[in-house]
Structure formats: C-alpha cells, structure tokens
Image 1 (cartoon, one colour):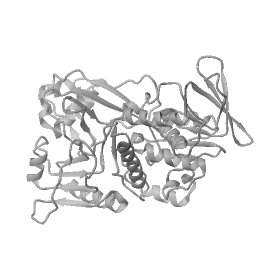
Image 2 (cartoon, one colour; image 1 turned 90 degrees about the vertical axis):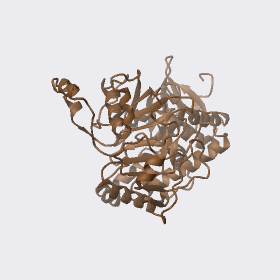
Image 3 (cartoon, helix red, strand yellow; image 1 turned 60 degrees about the vertical axis):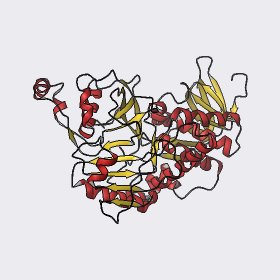
Image 4 (cartoon, one colour; image 1 turned 30 degrees about the horizontal axis):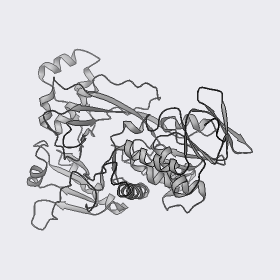
Amino acid sequence: MRSSSKKADVLICGAGIAGIAAAYHLSVKHGIKNVLLVDELPPLSLTSDKSTECYRNWWPGPGDAMVSLMNRSIDLIEDLARESGNRFHLNRRGYLFATADPARITTFKRAAEETAELGAGPVRYHKGRSEDSVYVPAPAQGFEGQPRGSDLITAPSLITRYFPYLSEHTLALLHPRRCGWFSAQQLGMYLLERARECGVRLWQARVEGVEIAGGRVEAVHLNDGGAPVKIWTGNFVNAAGPFLPHVGKMIGVDLPVFHELHVKVAFRDALRVVPRDAPLLIWTDPTLLPWSEQERLALAGSEETRYLLGEFPSGVHARPEGGEDSDVVLMLWTYDTKPVKPVFPLTFDPHYPEIVLRGLAVMIPNLRAYFGRMPKPVVDGGYYAKSRENRPLIGPLPVDGAYVIGAFSGFGLMAACASGELLAAHLTGADLPQYAPAFTLERYADPEYQKLLERLSETGQL
C-alpha cells in the first residue's frame, strides 16, 4: 500500500459488515474505483463475527421505516444468495416467539397486526378451527417460495404437533416468517471479494485523525505500525462499530450512541434436545430460574449469587448452529442492559452459561438433562452501539464529506446490505428511498421526529 497513491475517493473507517457493505455499493453498484477500507483488525473480526447471524423484517413502529429498511435489505440478501449459489447458507426458518402467559396472547395479536400494517406481511390465525388458515412449517434449508407475514398459533394440537419439544405450559406461538439466519462470515467475505474486484483496497491500519479544512474533510491520518501516513480524500465514512463515537469526535461530531454488552454461548447438544430444523426460539415471559431447594439455599447464602434467585426478564433465545451433522446450539439472553464503556478484551459474568441454560430449560424442559453437567461452553460477544430509539445512523454528518453508517445494535448483519446502499446513495447524490430521513443524524433536530420518539414504547430489541 505504501507504494500506491496516497489518495482515495472515499476512505471507510471500519471493515466490519457495515463498512464492507458500504464499500461494495460504492464500488460495485456506483463504479467508484478508488475506495480505501481501513481497519486495524482483519475484516469482520471485532463484532460482525460474534453475531447470532439472524435476520428479520419483524420490527415495531411508529412508522414503517425499520420494516422498509429490513425488507429492502432482505431483498438484496436474497439476490446475493441467488447470485452466489447461496454461498452463505441463507435460510428462512423464522423466529418463534413462545409464551405460557394467557395475557400475552393479546400482545402477540397486536404485534402481528401492527407489523402487518407496516409492511411485514399478513397475519394467519391458527385456533384449531376448520376455517383457519393452514399452518405451513418452515423448511430447514433455503428461502424461496416461503410465506411472508406471521402465524399466530393458539391451537394446542398444532403446538404439540410441530413443536413437541416446547414446554407443556406453552399457550401460544407467534411465528414471523421473513426471518432466519445465514453465515455472516461468508456473506461479508463475498461482498468484500466483489468490492475488491472493482478496485476497493483494504489496509490494516488505525485511523489516528481526520483533517478538516474550510469545513470539509481533506485528509485522514493512518498508523499501521510504521511511519504515519496521510491519505488525501474528500470523503470519510465512519463505520467504526463500537468505536463510532470515538471516531466521530475526530471530526468534532458527538454521536448520540451508547453501548451494551451482548454475549452468546455455544455448546454441544449431544442429546439432540434442540431439533436441528428448529427456528430461532424465543421465550417471551419473565422467568425464575429452575433450581433445586438445596441449590437455592446455597445461592441465597452468598451476596455474589443471590441475584440468581430473582426474576430474569423475557427474551432468552436459542437456535441450532450448523447442519444436520452438527450438535452445536447457540444460546443468548441479555438480562443486563445497563450502558457500559467498550473495553477489550471482553469479560463475562461467570454464571452466564448456567443462567442461559436454565432460562432456556423453562421453554425447552429436556435441557434440564444438562443441569450440573453442561458440556464446556464457548462464550463470546460484543458491544451493541445503540441510539436511544434503537435505529441506525446512516447518512451525512455536519462536516462536508463526512458520513456515518452504524449504531446497528446487533442488527448490522441483517441491515447491512440496504444500509450500505443507502450510505452510497447519500455519498453519490443518487435518489434516496422514502425511509432515508428516519436514519440521518438530522432526525433529532426534527420536531415531528421528537414527537415520534415520545410515542415510542417498543424498540424491537430482542
């Protein structure tokens, strides 16, 4: 790289999925050849590869901006799957929300009908009556020809028939269908390969500063361990993931972003308790962890473990990872959502694997077989960079030539393709989609948007 021109039409700080998607759209779709992608770590290695790799068009309002963004992103992901021979193993198994609380059935119905109105697709009701819609289970592989919208299942016979591994106390299931998962690494690398074929250069270095002259971006200073390097450029994209606010300060912009630590566990389900064709399984009820009386007495005796006896929030979830020959299950539960400062390397609650396993056992009782003898888990995670309303920041910043793409709060993989497209449209002056204003930094200065925030009761965070 040192022998190459120290100029770039666009310099992107961050080679996670957001930066790579932006580079792909700028180069492949808009023909900009001199795009420089800069990260001090290998591509996709900070947070993008720590994801559960899921996607959904299932988002609450107010407004249809999130559903529209995700529908567009899924359209693009499906196009890439067709183009690549589904190299990244896109499936459409759906998300399965489950409850044992009769009061939550009304909540399920309201959420399904609201999301349908926002463009996610129709609701199909399954109450066990002859006039009901026919429930079509999702295939384990592939994504073509599957229904949109959601299925609300309250017929006990259907719950038992299709999901016999769930708790006998399960009263209702809500199955959004334009949802599933894919290989993040494979999708990201495919986008990067296509971008590099169109001239994108990747440089492993740290962005040290951004030079502003006359109110606009003029150059970016890099450090790759050798002599400092100055790259002349008129366009700088902040795609720095959890370091979004830090990089924002380099151009004098405070980005309204905070951080949460989100952790996942992978363990070997040798007993095959979780079926290999299961969708993403989500328990929507607050939960008391199942402990024996002897365990309760022991936990109560220490201040460090007493919290394990309290009620944990809703949202524990899991999915199988890999094909039929795999026995790996991914488990997640963000029960602690207090804002934190990103610190690397990460540290985790030592009780986290046991907490998540026991929480899941409320939904999937046969997981109790692992109590006290859980196979050695693999624990990893990353920081979610979040805006107040859990919507991304995509678009220009108050310095000419400066842009942001980030604050994806765990949905970066599913949103990356449409977000990269949107960022590229802003930068090149192309036509913007109707949802574009909902994601710019300028939205916070809009009195109408402030009114919208006041009505916000649900952010869509799992």
